[in-house]
Image (cartoon, rainbow, N blue to C red; front, side, top):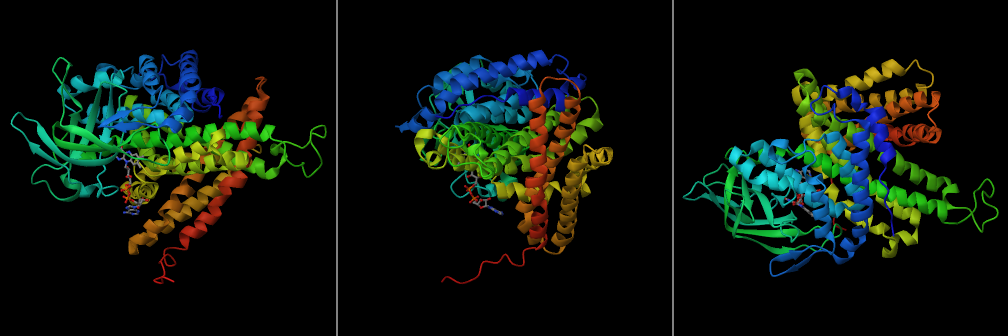
Length: 595
Ligand SMILES: Cc1cc2nc3c(=O)[nH]c(=O)nc-3n(C[C@H](O)[C@H](O)[C@H](O)COP(=O)(O)OP(=O)(O)OC[C@H]3O[C@@H](n4cnc5c(N)ncnc54)[C@H](O)[C@@H]3O)c2cc1C
């Protein structure tokens, strides 16, 4: 069965050496975030993930959730694990101290979020969605709503869910039909059916707070006529006590490819009592203000699963004896050499590793920008941070989930036939990873968001938050002979990205299909250059560390070797992506021929 070890040393590298979080003491709460405190928090998180959540991963997959008479039962051990998770304060981590939270930083939270995804991604959905619902109420709710719901969501006494999708309304939420009729006492009566609602019903906690998108009477058609409502499973009294069961029920749970331990529910609202959150008819916009963070969390699901898949593939590649190294036996005393002597196996392992470590650097850098946006007192610094987050969100969501999914596939390839059979636990990673490419805005939609919204905004303002630092880094380091091998590739990647951006801007003016047709490849090209930037910076740090006696030569040598692999073998795909993007949509018609 697979094992999981939290990548603590890499987290430390990113926090202390790469991001140098100690330099951000002017951000509220950062002065207390000493390396010792961060180590303690990470090691507690690692203990929970390695000892409690990971051992439940295969059980959750095998047993799944059970549905009977409207009730959903979590797999064995999941309720107790959630209680342990909540009691240790993890659900309150980044929440507002005014409403039950601990107010800790997003950047540190990323480490624990990744660990949970690596140990048991299906478990992570319950706290992840609760956090999304908490944020939505926190940003858009009234003071009374915040007081009523948030502290119990932060403590993990209650969980939260996001109810958008309906049978006819998936990506196109403008098609939502669920109705909200005003009632006599200032609330609303909610009627309609939502599908695919993760954790919509379960027996893990005593109450579930639903955030439901619905239409008010006479609301404009389409996405501008949707409002958001808070609809608790059990009514909540002013003193926080639980009252009657609301008029909502779970009609069924889906049988699905992966994340079996997370119930995906059909939810029926039959005149359920709800309250408006935020402004009428602006519910979709409100929902999307907290979507950036939710999308980054989904990206991390891809990273966490890629990490655990890589760890197990590496162990296996060192143990499994098959064939001989082509240049002569490496272990003549054994019946054969281990898989890792074969270049193709190393290609797969390094592809995986260059993704996980590059992704970790990029997402933690982005999380630090979230902290800057929320905590800085400098308006310019805040604005720049927000621009970067806006730009990177669709890239992280889409590229991390797609590449994370491919990484789990590579791990199965390294295991060969043993990877394909259930007993070794590797095929679960592929099944669990696949959904992240679909939910929280399917990946194709993320690419459209990048080319349609993020790139053109204020004539490329968001883009500049990335292009400027990369160009500056290249200019600063290109004369440094040790760095030339990295800056050379980064420069070429950036050049392809700039050419693709100019091509898109010019061509899509005449034909919007050009931007839409190129969007996914453009997002990938952007991601490659962003990873190239992260790797070049990591290499620079590692080169400097090797000059001082740190006693960690292996660690820094590995960083440089992985950076080299990424620059030469992965980022070089920018050439083919540019060629494909600029080939345009003219050859993208489906032939009208059925034979
Ligand atoms: C396990 C699971 C859990 C989920 N959890 C939740 C939840 O908690 N809450 C919730 O509200 N929903 C949830 N969903 C629903 C999920 O968010 C939707 O499935 C997703 O938004 C896509 O909608 P759809 O399935 O209707 O696909 P469609 O919208 O029909 O899309 C199908 C394909 O077409 C593409 N496409 C659609 N429109 C366009 C376009 N304009 N241009 C280009 N391509 C397009 C999409 O990218 C996609 O690849 C969940 C789904 C699953 C399977």
